[in-house]
Length: 285
Image (cartoon, rainbow, N blue to C red; front, side, top):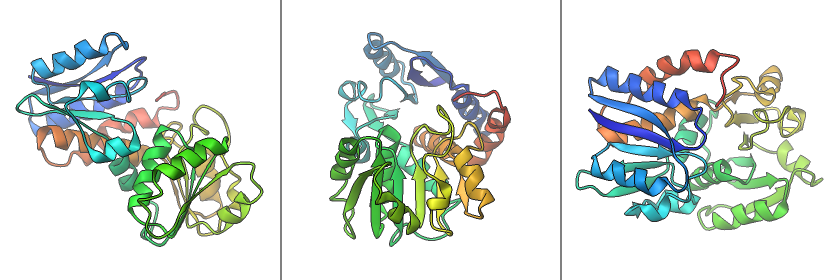
């Protein structure tokens, strides 16, 4: 039996194991996915263990997404640009290759709610943290007509906008803050609004007033628990298309599984397996 795992501290993500182990079973693969609570001091040893034992690979969550990088043999360009590795493949010759599934997961989730191409669209991203970096990078590669990043601190928005400015060849990435009076005009013209903050999960309420968005603006919330955030609820109630982050969650897991095993896409199997968890009002990410 070959192993895959998730490294982090603390770990409450039982849904990751549920999805991957259901996929192993459905594909008839003698594999297992396990949760490994790992401290910073233990991380090098666990990485060496994965290499030596010939694991499929492993995933990384907080607080190790940056600390993992110097322990790897290679980091793929998208992960390097985003500044975080969340998955690692152990190749047949024992090399450790870091990649990031956030971008593909986000774009797959986004496709369920955005009925037009990102190319040529006007998009607004709330947040400038780790997830927002993946979201902004993914959007930038699709060449929107305009992209604005908003956060509490202008310095954080500007940093993200600068990092990906050369990827967007149709427009500059604008940086702003949530309290900037000019943000209202930008939201009113947006084709897509993405919440890439923890608002709705760790704090209540939508990150921006839904009524400030254009009437046809699509809304994507990276938060997947609770299943219906206030942002998603209000957007749907107003007739705007809206989706939460569960499609992104499942697509991330499926991307890693296919990369590790070469098996067929397990998205449907993973979605069925994780459904009871997502439907549980007491579940926590």
